[in-house]
Image (cartoon, rainbow, N blue to C red; front, side, top):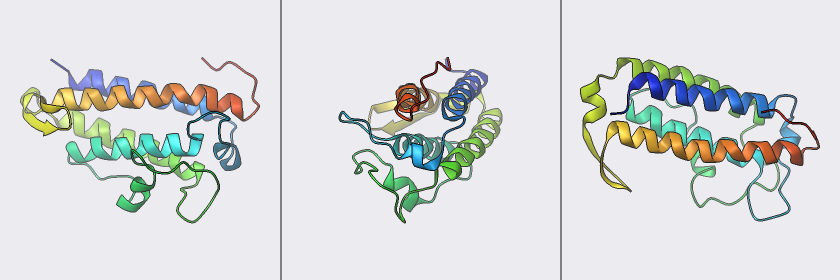
Length: 161
């Protein structure tokens, strides 16, 4: 069974990687579009925060992006190709990630093993809360890995991890 402390550590590890991969980058850097099909760092971070919003909702914690902001970065949304009024600033996305970790930690520490074992419906079918949260962690990890290449796109020419 998925344990709350394992999920807390897993989400925290992703946050640490993201912080390391984004260190020294600017909002302008976050808007650089890769030369191949994909999304810029701003979209990837916004998508991760939107995913964390869903985790926070499952855990009955306060979300860190508004519904409108999160929708801009949702599955199937248009790529972020330029700054605009609907684009969340890079620094705000990083701050929202930090706040989300606080909520995830609080919600998971409050969750009992019985809470995590409860069955829920999702796009994956019937699953448990713990398995749903683990899938959301897995999804976040996929996008966390993209930050390495998007850091290099900004011209850093370094190796963070």
